[in-house]
Image (tube, rainbow, N blue to C red; front, side, top):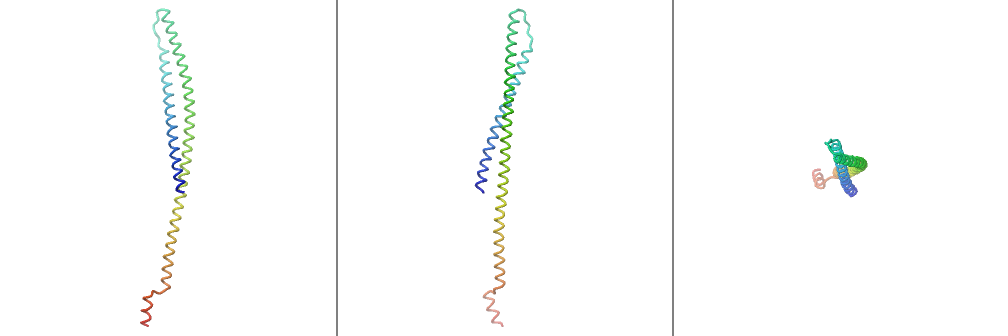
Length: 157
């Protein structure tokens, strides 16, 4: 039983490591999503900036610049959606791994409880055996006279 519990504890260690790894991936993905949000906000601010254009060439350049910004913004929005979907998938994986870890912890707790109960039962059997031996010795001693006492009682009588 002890070996099984040791193996289960090793497995629990591996599960905990897996949980930490998946949590690291969740954190990374959350940071990635936040970077995309920050990029989108910055690109939106840049798109909203109005500049003074006095020549047709400047207007053309500003229009191309804003069109490029809008295209980059749209790309960032698409990337954010993909990153959020990936984040959802990783979070589901994290929940599954955490459930497995919890189930394993409960199995280990149950095995430990059973093992401790078994040890307590063994201890009780040993104590009962010792108590019965002591009782038997006392009862035998009460029935059989001691050698030294037997000789004294005959000489007096």
